[in-house]
Image (cartoon, rainbow, N blue to C red; front, side, top):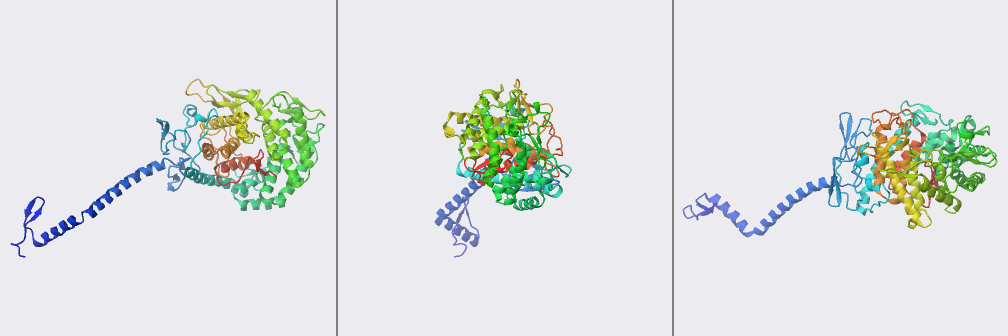
Length: 633
């Protein structure tokens, strides 16, 4: 075919006489289009679907980052100068060069959307669902009085709120995040312990600012022994093994020349050794516990057979300090030996320890007041003991006496009913006489002599009340259990607010509870002279127990927020120090780290976040008042 014979080609609405090759190509394309129209439609459809998928993916990234339960884990650290910025919206942003958590993003806006609450801020929260179960929680750095009026957890205030259970997928996500947080708590323990081992091994305490050792407990190696089952639970077995070797070679109670506190020595050292034995089965711990407890028995040689508060471990001399009225004994001291001594009798087969403490509680049972609440000072130097004055408290001087009523019953496999009777009557008395509420609905527990104050020590009560409710013979169906669990939840909220309403995010040792008359008022202010935070464990203890029993993820978050305040303000070069004034967020920690920080605070913070522990507080395990874990046998 020559060019003259070539047919005209239709091109964009007009005829053309292009070259042969151009015409041939156009013919080919028209042919493909004509005969493969279906293929072309499919290709276009696939292209549209790809674009749509990419668009939805971008939206999903933003929504997913805003919807992780508890808040998203730290997944990547990027070094920026001397600081470390943690990505992925963990809610805890800037870590300084020594890895101390510094700042957390504040909630900037809270907006009601239908029946849900949407919290918008840098932490990218997802919606709280309409039954108010907290799927994700805000990473607050809103501290101070504004938390009294702008708090996303206010539904917990009166104790009646019950969180809905989460689905399997959400629980897996929660637990994965909690494991990462657990490991951060473990790193805190490693920081403190490694410096104790390096600079003050065998001393009672490590001074966290100077790195020196001190013997505030007569040279009993208190921090080492108090930390043994923490090391075990955190799988720090090499450190545990080295401590065991030191104890076997060096710990000799015959060399202790000073008088010791019967109460502190029992709960920290006897309790620590027994827990180490229960965990490891190493007989050296049981031998040392029996040796020490035998020496403590000399405190029971009073005319009433109720123990004195102090004893010399080698001279068989016991006494009470002169500052106590009439040189009496303290209720918590004489009533908080029974858990350890009973466990020791079971483990050793020697009944003398159980007999001594059972006699104490039989005497106290016969002296029980009508409301179940005991005065905190007891005259033991008379053959017939009697109470001195009438101060009653679940804080200092009284706290663990009531705790051990319930725990002695649990440790007896719920068979020794006298102790449950004492506990139930005391908790009735608590509700009748010592439980108060301010005009903002904040529930708190006072003594009968200081009716507007709540001690940090009293924050063990939420955990105790919840444990008592769940182990009641009629379970949670009983009216008493319902009441006690509601009180437990309300008091846990109160204790949490004692932290977050302070600028430092730490709680004072004693707080004055105020009525609020304006939006700028706090519910709490530190009592003058008691503005300090001593690394106390009571709130963390209660949060662990409440989460363990209720599975409410909110308690995990509260504990994580408190832990980060400790990390921010109390971490020192060699450990963690007490904080002098919780109203001031700019101070350095002091050169004092109690052994209970490692024994209790970090242990409970770790277990709260640990979804893999096998502890069973209903039937199989009991913590003593120093967080030493005993098996029910």
